[in-house]
Length: 57
Image (cartoon, rainbow, N blue to C red; front, side):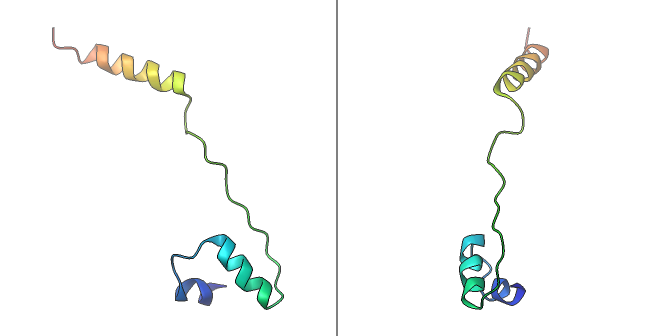
């Protein structure tokens, strides 16, 4: 698997999985879910707090 990844460094996990299946090696492919690190409400409140603290008055 490492040699295959070194040959084609931009290959996705799915492509590596297909090449491993050709030589009868099973490997599970899991990608983590894509989600924001913090909630939108927390982002807005943090932004407003920063903006209010840095107002030019």
